[in-house]
Length: 266
Image (cartoon, rainbow, N blue to C red):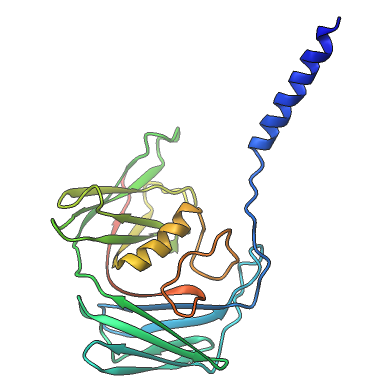
C-alpha cells in the first residue's frame, strides 16, 4: 500500500515535466515608440527607399507610425552625396541613384535631434539560375508543392543570400537566408520551406534573390532563427544585431536583386 503514493507522485512529476516542455517563454519586450530604420540601395535603377517608423507592441503588427521630417542622405565611396526626399509619410526616396557592385554606401539619418549612420558594401551579383516546384516529400498532401532555387556559387568568394517568395503576388512572411560556408564554389539547390501559404498547381510563384553583405546577413539570419515574420516593426524576442550607429531597430543594405517567376504545374 505504501507504494501507491510513490506512483502517484511520479505520475504528477512526469505530467508537470511534460507540461513544462510545451511552455515557450518568448520574453517579449514591452518597449514601444523606438525608431526603426529600413534602408535599401539596389543595383536596379531607382527609386531607392529608406523607411523610418516607430515600433509597436509585438501583438499589434498592422500599423507602424511613420517618422516624418527627417533629413536623409547617402554617400558613395567616390564622394557623391544623394539627398532623399520624403515621398510619403516616413518614406524617403531618390530616383537618381543606382548602386554598383563592390561600392560602399553610407547612410545618414537625422531626426529628433539625433544622427544615425550605417555603411554597407554591395556584393557582386551571383546569377539566379532557375527556380523549380516539386512535391514536398515531408507533406502528406501530394498536390502541395515546395519551391527550390538553383544557382552556382562562385569559388573563393564569400557570399550571403536572402530570398523573397511571392505566391500569386502575396509575399510569404518566412525569412530565407543562406551563405556559402559549406557550398563555396558549388552548384546550390536551396529549398524555400514555409507553411505560410500553400502552393498548388496553377499558382504563380516569384522569387527575388538578393546578394547581401555579412552584417545584413547576420541581421536576417537572427530573425530567421527566431522564426520572426517580417522586418522591423514589432518588439521581437531578441532584437537582431543592427549595422546602424547608434543602435536602433532595423538595417541598411546595399544589395543586388534579381527575380524569376514560374507557374506551378502538376
